[in-house]
Amino acid sequence: MYLQKRNRILRQSPAIRSMVAETVVTPNDFIVPLFIVEGSNVREEISSMTNYYRLSLDNTVAEVKQLYAMGVKCILLFIKCDDALKDNKGTEALNPNGLMQRSIRAIKDAVPEMCVMTDIALDPFSSYGHDGIVENNQIVNDATVEVLAKMSVSHAQAGADFVAPSDMMDGRIGAIRKALEENNFTNTGIMSYSAKYASCFYGPFRDALDSAPGFGDKKTYQMDVANSNEAVRETLLDIEEGADIVMVKPGLPYLDIVQKLATQIHVPISVYQVSGEYAMIKAAAEKGWLNEEKAIIESITSIKRAGASLIASYFAKDFIKIINA
Image (cartoon, rainbow, N blue to C red; front, side):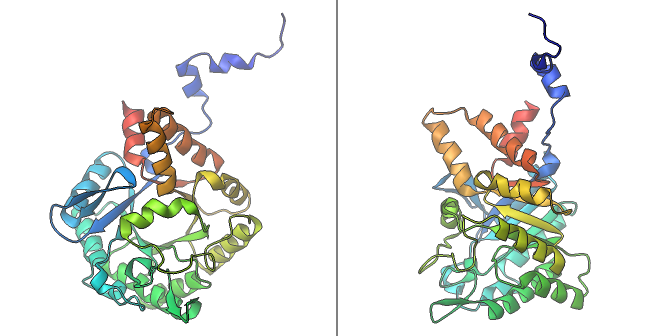
């Protein structure tokens, strides 16, 4: 049989496939989420996230050193707040000697070259487990934004390179940018969770930080899973208000959103491969239903292929070890 073109020629060996690969993921593409708890020499496995841990600050610093040695350039910090410190105003979030602020300083002292991003939201500090201040069973927007702006300045004072508002309150990017400028933190970046959906895939994360909502759900501020044009509107507005990087969360179920944004905007897009995605792959692999290493490579590659510049993933270390093996 005569064929003018045989497409399989470019697939016939690993060397050729690597040469012509359109999408290549490197350690530079990762943001590694870290969960920090009080104490010393603490390493607690998260029950719903096999082989992922809550770490005390000393162990977190050791982990960051290892990540940097592996080629990771960016981490995203979350802290588990003691219940006794939680209230409805996010008071502990503004504590200059709080766990988050101490963590930023310790990490920047130990590995100054590491880009440190910090979570900006009230749910870890809220007695209600919501991302904002609660009044009459409603999450109020404007009062929450005021606290988020102060929280961002507090993180910048501690040395954060980027603040990452994950709350989905209206107008918070503009307010945070204004607060950073007024306090002379002109080099502090904002990675906005611009298209954060009200997803069921966050369950294990809420286990990690004990931050599940105490009543209702988060659908009055996180996005409806049915919408895509809304994601574009939210993202364009965040860019206009001063976001340097925008985020889509979760990952795999929303790659259509990533691709849609990639054709319309010209700032870096980050994607969060969330805890539920991690847990699904881990659980299926433990059952012998899929090959874990192949699933890790395929899922993360697909996220970058869709248009992500950066990928926040609990699989970052595993991915790097696999490609370096």
